[in-house]
Image 1 (cartoon, rainbow, N blue to C red):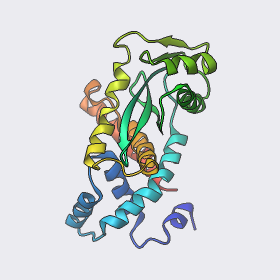
Image 2 (image 1 turned 90 degrees about the vertical axis):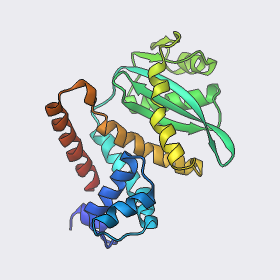
Image 3 (image 1 turned 45 degrees about the vertical axis):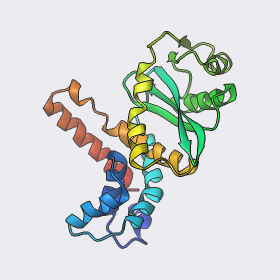
Length: 232
């Protein structure tokens, strides 16, 4: 018995349906109920609650495999943080993207001080396997603290407007946050965003930068990578 069969053996639905539902939820701004309707239109009767459980269980597992397959990020990180309200409390979502627009990491924290910045920078160093050549941030002092202690050799650019790339990268998260009527808990938010980022990176193909033919090739490769990650 292969690993894929072991993973899905207690589920009455074929693995292809589970993989498709998880992909739909993290790829598009759809609710679990909307995905239930889409599957029903195809003759597949499954409750939205089952879809939610599939996303919670299999999404993080697919993400681990996608990260293992990932070829690596660029050498310049654009870093920013925005506040999100969860259960009535303000928290901060830290985000880093590279020069190609790929999300290096997202990390939810309760503060935006020097200690919070250092925790996030440590995650970046781990994901990147070393210091990036350059980081671009706003003038928040916390970034300077983390830079001096953890990335002293890295160029630190705080020029006005230079960090627009990171600020714009928050938009997909804001769209999903509204669609989900806000995140319900810190754990749920971090789990969802971790999978959302992995799927976003995989299908962030720069459609406006390549020909239709090349885009189809890149999209086909992305689907192959997704199926490989989902076939654990």
